[in-house]
Image (spheres, rainbow, N blue to C red):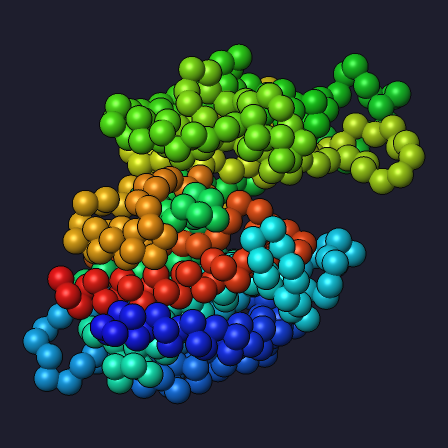
Length: 464
């Protein structure tokens, strides 16, 4: 039995104990957005610190202005020639579980239940990101048991603010840049193509968040006395935002599409070969008609084209029954998903100009900017990506799909901008994991094979 076989056998033997450890971690309600759970965030950080210490890492909690970061190091084998140095990232914080009444079991009382692919753990944070973080920790545990430690130097960074936009992570990285130096970052916070097909994500959309506030009269007005004479901010904001898209689904901000490269014919062919059914994709959520840019493929629209969406809109009276007012102000929250080639500051400025050009006399607009991150394309031909492809092919018996991700992972930008690191995005989530929704789950088959895949990745890098 060679080293890899021994590692996999150890992971298989320890699977039930690994699930038990995951359940233990999931019991800690580490909700970073809620001040009442600050102590729970510390407990979750201490828990993962202790797990890493138990398998040979030097690990500690580092304080930030909000929640602590766990930093851990393993030097790799003694006396070995200089090998790769990997930085593994994860996060221990979770989303709020609301609405609680939609959960089939309490969100922080994990349960293991039967699913279509075998057992699954249901709890807040199951897949995002405690389960996916624990996979690579369990792979390190197998290396510790069989070989005394991983075959190369490892740095681990596990933060507690990802679900609130990681406001303190980039400054922390900048302040500790020398300590966090590595050759590549490894992140498991993305998905597979399906339960049988592994995937590496090579592109992420970025994001700009804006809150728009429009004001007119100095108070709410009686719609009978003033209707037909006084400016209505609700009417105005809906008209302005209604102009954001044309009849072809294109965003109308001047310069919005400038600098965006076209998807290559080769990449478009790869995506076509995946056999994605937009009909089934929409059908699962009760829809049937796709929207967005005309004459663009479904995966291209989801992975490689930018968007503009109104996330919330309010103003005036919204309670039960009728109150016939013309409100003095109206508000909306808007996000733009960005792709490589776009700059978030330019998009923000273009939106402000777009709104101001449509403001009549007596109306004023203010803009609150929130989180912003660029779209990213990860090099798909590096030695580390090739090693991950080989490890996944070894585990699943088929090539990994090279996919995009419509969402944003701001830490990938920080890894590149602050530490100069490219990232290998090797995730094991599924489309039906209900991330950020009630009854979040992680299939134990994905957890198990993800752990084995991380162990194989280290073996591949050790033999490269």
